[in-house]
Length: 121
Image (cartoon, rainbow, N blue to C red; front, side, top):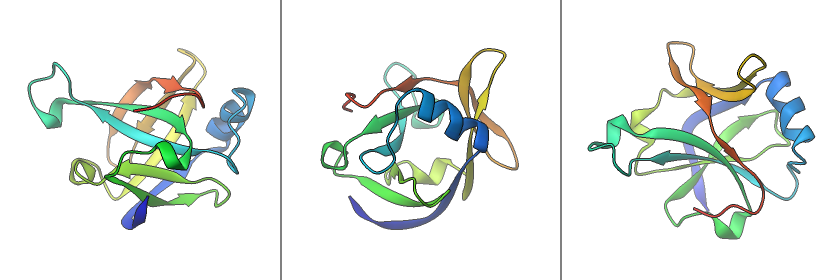
């Protein structure tokens, strides 16, 4: 995984709680914010997913994000980082029981799929 990009991702307390329930171990895994574009016709129409991955399984284009809380590591594909705001928030909504990706300015994905620690991109 390459260096840190200018972006910051904040993982809310509620999202941290849910990640722990799903047995996500921040000392062993990276939260990769993927951007799936298959079948969308355009990169800006892609859909964000949250994937727990081992650092060595991250795509070559992955870059680390400044992450709060600091015991977590998050990464994103540098080829699509321009799509997102500089401050991202990973939250959890109990009503649909789904993670959300948002920024202070907009909702990016209100029903973000989470794939556990065995996932690969």
